[in-house]
Amino acid sequence: MADAHAEAQFYASARGAVAARLLRERLAEFWPDLTGQAVLGIGYPLPYLRLWRESAARCIAVIPAQTGVARWPAGSPNLTCTAEEDALPLPDLSFDRVLLVHGLETAENARRLLREIWRVLKDDGRLLIVAPNRTGPWAYLESTPFGHGQPYSSGQLGRLLAGALFRVERRDTALHLPPSRRRMVLRGAMLLERAGRKVTPGLAGVSLTEAVKDVYAAMPRRAVPRRRLVPAEAM
Image (cartoon, rainbow, N blue to C red; front, side, top):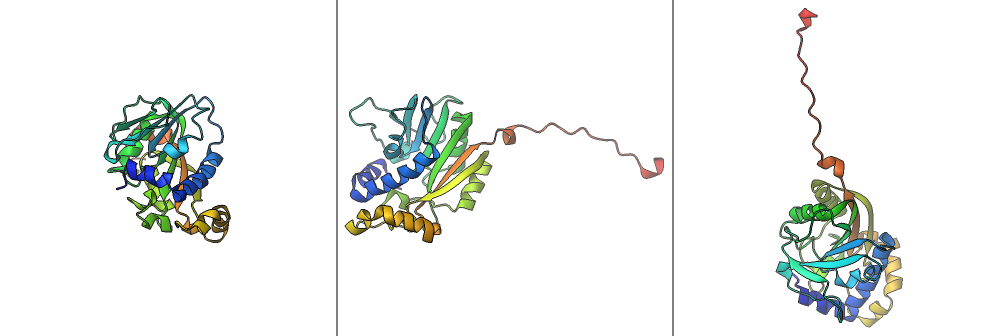
């Protein structure tokens, strides 16, 4: 399992900076403006929460206790805390948006983590998951945070979300460039990313899945009144 220190080192590298930039572009397409909203990042979301920190009413990060401690943002009051993934120290219905990145694939119990997110998310809130793609090369390279834990196919992720009372609304992919440290690859990252999206979409490094709370699925159905059976000969 990657820890917070290793993840910080990755994003401080040239390859990590390129990966973060490409992924932020896709995240910004999902949520271009979160002005006045409460945003929660879970896992290791620190390179991505900067998209909304200035405009959001609240923007905090929760890092699972088993991965270590990280401070964010630098030079400002700390907006991160550590917590058990199945016991978030947050009130019910308190966030408009939840970003889960570097969290689902390494969770000790993914379903319980998603149920905790369901609890703290407002009824009209949205969850955005970044998860390693099972068929992409990034999921099998342990020198990056995407190469740790359980990668997912879109079908597996959809079933997991449905079991946790979420409904998938939108999907996308990112990190189509090879997970290389070579300068030539990193310099041509934008071109490689665009080409990969068109030519080999199934080999993306990560999948992005936006889901909403399936509130109606959580409501108990009204009991159907039993009908008395009447023998046919009595009719």
